[in-house]
Image (cartoon, rainbow, N blue to C red; front, side, top):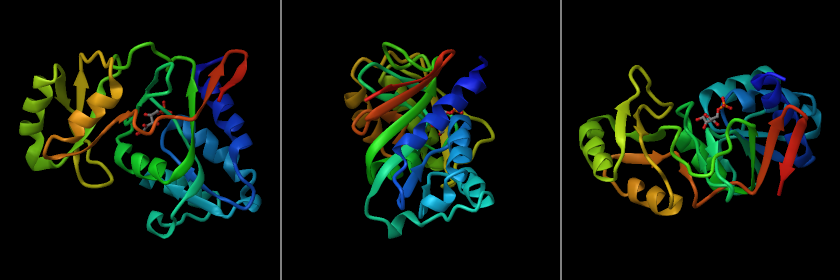
Length: 218
Ligand code: 5RP
């Protein structure tokens, strides 16, 4: 099985958590794209979606799924999204696709976070994947200095502007043994919009696409 086939297995398995007549929180990325295809197959059984990026919104609309404004929704039953890394306690690094801030917002209004990954994403300690940090452009160098003080090596993601008009610093060389502390510390740096650690709001369910199919951990 290829990595994309494993992503597809995870994406389609997440249909199990889609509530009939509900509005579904939808993340961003290549694994989520498979989930959106799956959602298209049941589009007459759901009310619509709240999306975490312009890219996902476009794909949802192309399939005829109504996209609701996050401001009009108080609570979602379920949010389905991918991850760049996930540890055994279901803390994640996200933001490889630069959608981390909107992802965190939609996750925050969701009762259940269903994380869909292929089996290359599981790690014991987060940080091998560079941690994305969304930053207000004028704060780039100041935030980079503060991130160095925290032990990381921030690298400016050239040519990328987020859906919110900001830039991304990818922090290399971090061994994140206390994800909640690190999430809090980085978010406290002036100029940081948010960082890609999802520890305060981690996943509730992990669906891993493996060569022998999708495995579900609740
Ligand atoms: C986007 C994300 C994605 O969920 C993460 O990058 C995983 O992407 P993929 O499913 O393409 O491997 O956080 O900001």
